[in-house]
Image (cartoon, rainbow, N blue to C red; front, side, top):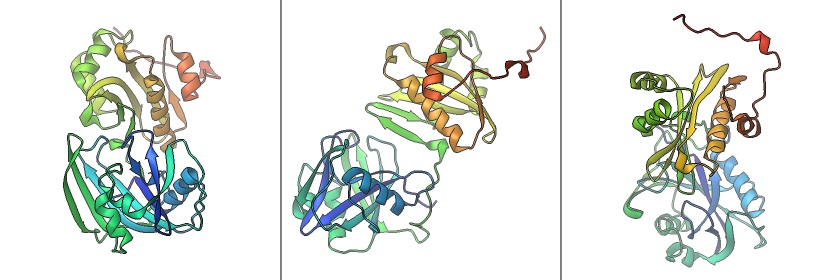
Length: 311
């Protein structure tokens, strides 16, 4: 399967120095790294690199040079791929940003200092020496890098291919919390305990019904240290209509914005599919959905009808 980068990592060069970012947030919090971030849907990696460089440093770079592909497994965020870029800039006058502290550092320091993300020690010396772009894969166990594999790029790797988000495996991290669309992560016991035992709308719903509803829906989970703490489900044709339902946040994790995060992610999914009508029903959370999801009351409620099976 062709690797599609979802992130960029950029190293700006001026003379014998590299612009480095001391990261304020995870991943790699408290360590020095290059600048970069997510590739937005529809962007090529180079377009994303140009945007991220401007947003994080203020530099206008027209054509950053592709320098390699970085992948990983076992790290603090799910496996993925990063397109690495380098670019020369004409001065050392960067702009500040909210991601962390920027500073120009000697190339030798960037390639070997313990304060730097340690996999940079592997690939940056090769890149700065002018080696051709390679594929760097790093394996981690218990936050320790245990294996490096360096290989040529796949023959069918396409740098100019616009990024297409795969929602079935989409994940994002906020601090110690992970939001994921991956059904393999769902903990059905936790979902059943809340829906059938604690919710007002699904009391006594059988487990087999819950399992079938999950199988036939788009599902979102939020996890804290591996344990599921929140859930939502979208019933949708992935084209014109969606129903947001079974939304919950576990009692011990409320008040941390997890419900807002679920609603935002669900709405981003619907927007990405071009869905024009998303519905939900709630007894007491209208304000949340109105403020963070843009939901509105029906303008013509008399148009809508419902059906329940006869007893």
